[in-house]
Length: 205
Image (cartoon, rainbow, N blue to C red; front, side, top):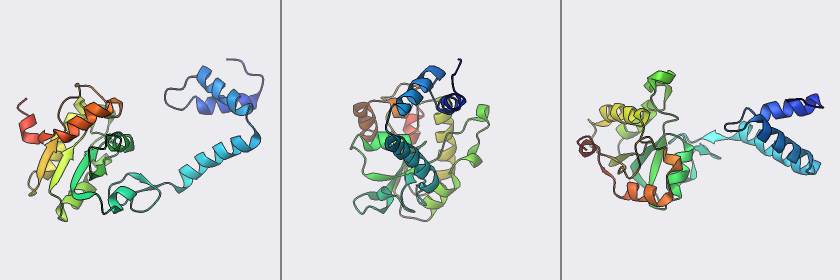
């Protein structure tokens, strides 16, 4: 792609680094910004810079937050004894949109994937085990994507948590194998949370 300006070329190259954005889409986005008032573009740039510099991760659940402890973990309306384990923040948002879950979360920050060089030590698993070991937890729900990586992670987590005096369950498989949690419709995901089953039972299916 030939550019009439090095500044334009550099901006397009940066936008093209975003997931799912090719050069043509990047060019369209950059040209759109050029057509906006300078104040609008400055607000856009400031919001992104502020996000990167000031965003925090909840000290309890690892979810993205504006505060040291996120609003979900600090809410007295949430069931602190029920922890839903998810891969990342997008899954928290997906489950929250169902309005079916009133417990709290633990964000792993990924899934175990030996093919990609991601092992248990690369995820926030030790903090989860410490959280459960500290007491007060009655149930842990595995709400991970129905993929090989998701199942591998669940198997490992079950081994780490099974000796604690807690109930361990997994969301019902209304979600097809290979399905990413964040793309599941809210009704199906909500029913999967509401009709969760003991993890041991799910192994025989």
